[in-house]
Length: 608
Image 1: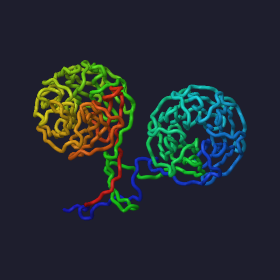
Image 2: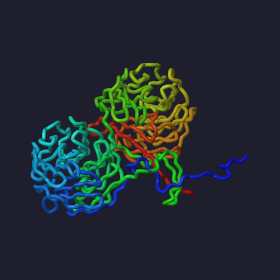
Image 3: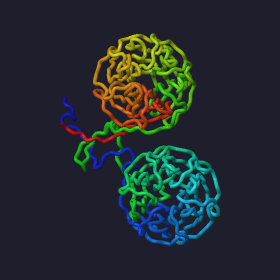
Image 4: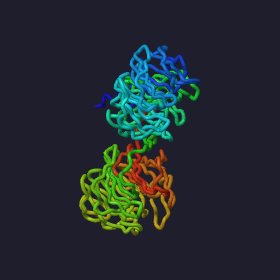
């Protein structure tokens, strides 16, 4: 009997807009009402629909203050002292303006109708930042002419010096309250990406913004914020903070710096940018809003976009993925091994710049590295199988030039235990599989074509690779793997790629760039990435290539070119960790971590 779906077909969801990953990623900027006076380098308080922008400068310093009601600006009472490069905090009815031109210490309080001079800052300064919920509770930090780390807290009657910023700077921006704030960007003297979080008693460094800037604007809170615009040079870039990391979202319509934002946005979904420089002084206002209702993006979605009249599929967009800097590893080294994924990974062994072989082991928890118990035998170029809490380290080189070893150790999440050795001592092998079912192949040994299979207890020699290589790499499983690149004796580099089916090797399409000592990640032979390495005897490159099961495609480069960095045997190609490595210039040994991230993407389905 025929199925109903075979006769009638099936329904594809119809949407008027593409799906999005989050509310904030669906946000955009739109024009608001112009200010009455074009200017920059002022300060602000309040929200998107109840905002005050005050002081600043164009041809001269201003006393002007204007209030925004969500559609238009109205001039209100002037400040007592004209100033620019002033710090600000509070709301449209309860605000503070402090510091500014010529290193002023002057502080003025706004009560909704007039400004009153009150207690001065202890340290007069300009281009400082502020945070605070009212005219009786605020924080002032950073500033110039000396690059200041000074932080002062206001309690409604006086300023008191409290814990300094970790990074002294000027032209930074602040958001939040007197007890929960962010200090973002700035310069000292180079432009910074640094971000620090205030908990009421001390500053802690947290994730950097993606694009270093100064004189930007902000809206939101210390755990949900937007920062936008700024200089390095003048940009329209907007980034969203979710309490742990920054994500680029929709740009301002007009790039500008030194505008004013809204200090008391309850979330990052409603922001304001007014005034600033493009580089001319402007009075324009932009409002950021994000949809309250949206369609969540999901892997494998198929839908019809009725606005663009196109069928779309949601996929992991590997060609659109990028590398970003992560926290440094504890011990700088190269020719180290790694297993795991972007949430949990393990690196071990390697070479310190001596030629001492390293025994250090470090674990990644998704945001930071921590030192764990060392290997029993320090070595470089070790084979690696498994995951972060169940790994195998095998073979390696014990010196320079290396004396190859057959040593095998297993990791139980806490410590390493020596177990049965490889049949053939080797280093720089191709690795694929788990701690109980894996394969290591080739490597720096004669003849360099041997393949050994691991069952969790013993090693067994199996079919040889077609082309003997060392300082190559591989990934996959015990029955479905890929080997690529490396060096063929005595020294030519190769772009050779071979697939493993559990029994034999088959040559397939080559890499675009022959190289050795690259990092590699992937779960199967169907998809993989191969990154970094050396394309000559000494050069370290940033080149990254993606394997789609048929051919290699060049994609986004590493931020820092290096060779002998770690990959991760069992990491999905949508997210990868690359740690350590070597560069042929001081400092030679690297402690760098870079994270490869591929997000979901809506792709139009076309027929041919």
